[in-house]
Length: 294
Image 1 (spheres, one colour):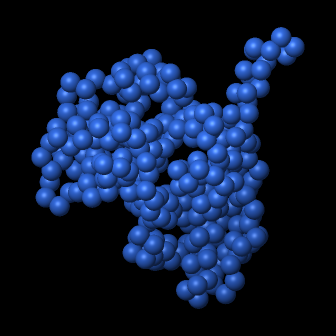
Image 2 (cartoon, helix red, strand yellow):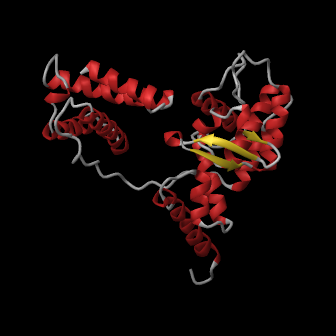
Image 3 (cartoon, rainbow, N blue to C red):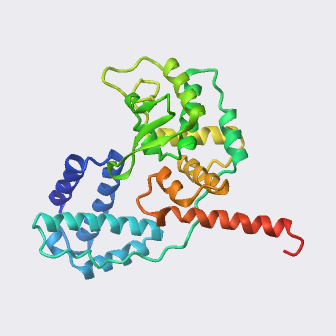
């Protein structure tokens, strides 16, 4: 089993050019499944020993360990990708995961900050140091373009179009798009580029750490948490919260759903439609608090 997992991870790394974060997530999921197989079948279990009944038992096993439905769904998605690859390679004759269903998940609305809180956060970031300028530039860009944090840290100098306030970003599946981020974000990026530390040879990233190398997604999350705590805002907000805020504020201001889909880089309009539930809830709240007959 371990050799099959390593071959699949090499496929993701070399052929699919998946990000390190994506590969790490797949590896964690598949190694846990391998541990389950070892526990239930014994050493030496391989993909050919897995059938649909075994996968359903694994789903029950995950639930018994207290994993949330969303976590179980992600682990099952990893297994679907893994067994599709095994079938293409001829390792298994049939895909045991093809009919596997995800557990039902409660619908959760995306978390977002109000416009006032976003402005409060951005304006309160101290910019008397180069790293403060970097942080202001990063979070202006995240909010200004509605970017994923992985897209933010992947931006290179060659991706910037300062004149048009556009940035070429690479989304899920390495799909590229041009993201408008606005003149405010671009101006702060310009200030950061002029103030950042010396760059290690060959490093083309825009956003760097103190060592002059590309920031990681986790580092951006920790930096945001520090600013949120320092300014009395909800520390459970994440970089993705700024992306949700971007979408919600656009829809609240009258942007059409299809345009927001394109700006977010969503492949399906269904993914974007969750934001309409957010704005509908806010409309109901406004009606109930303001209308005399509510």
